[in-house]
Length: 130
Image (cartoon, rainbow, N blue to C red; front, side, top):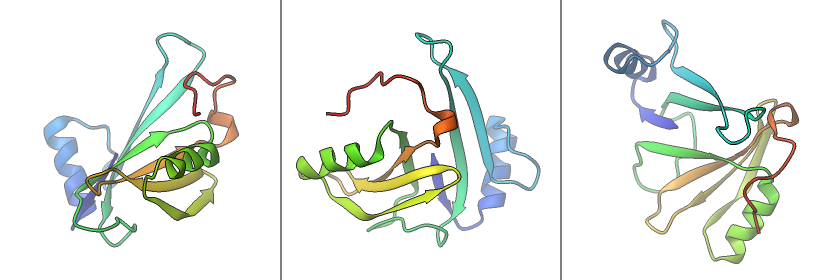
């Protein structure tokens, strides 16, 4: 989850203080590792980050948060969304953290799709993409 903020470090400190998020002092990111209840060998992680509103292209309007969904195959998911008439960004990004793409729901809320790098992918698909 990404939160838009005028002062990301201050906002992250507030969440640390008031909700107990495991954010390092002076930082603005927290992660939680977890295992699938059905497939104990499957490890995942959840990311929470306070980001400066100028750090990302947040899309139209003034959203305060952007949900990040983990996918097994970014290209297949983007094709599926486009075929369904969903507004999908032409741009994708690739880094050591994986591959990223973006789209919008019917109300214009932007969301991110994340295909983790191979070291974090499960050996089997558990949710069909198409």
